[in-house]
Image (cartoon, rainbow, N blue to C red; front, side, top):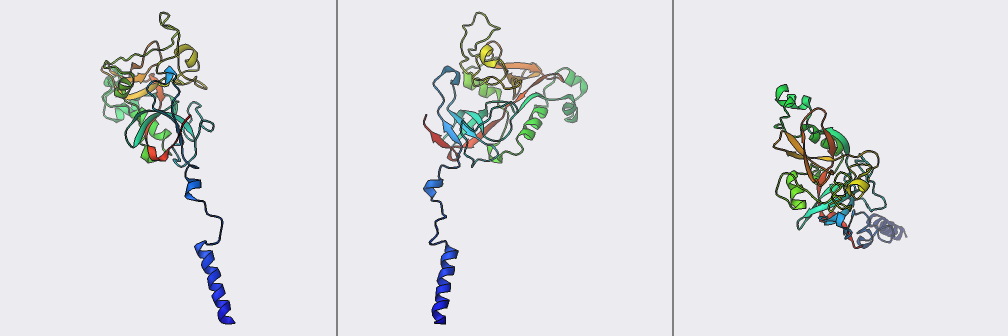
Length: 270
């Protein structure tokens, strides 16, 4: 009798330890798409020219289910589910830019950062840009410090803007709806996503896809210009790229670019 009792206890312990006979497991099929950022095709509207996918993703948690409904595009939002425009891809990845600024007003480089990098006051006052976007990159690092490091957050390059809009000159242009250009037909910008949320009146006056929520601003590239300044993405008139001086009172926004593995995304047809 004791032997039978011991055998029964052993069988029960085996069932508990192995999980057999329980109903608490979740099948791989059921959990496959529960926790993935969503990627959808862009609408056919002209304002999405050059966009390969619209992605909803939380850069602090790549295993989080993000959709249009739970994503936030408010100015200076830095975490949680957000909206991204994928403009470049290869077999495994998308390169994409956020639809709003994580910081609206920041210098490309301040005088303090320029001097600490070995420059002189005279050089800075003459808009010397030879130290690079130290201040802007420091702000980017602060804004993205909690993001997944595999995303390699960075500023967009002027060469990428030129490639997107198909130009080879320093000053690239694309069609915008601009009150500053009365001879231009009133219509949505062909690349409205590039200038998305760069002003509170951006949609009405410049053809952006959406207005900024509080103030918004145009945003820096990582690229120095040949005029003693730096390139930024411009919403004015027909501009895609503008060049602004490097100075203490020269401010534009920070808009991160990331590279994400396609395998972390769920692709949804709409």
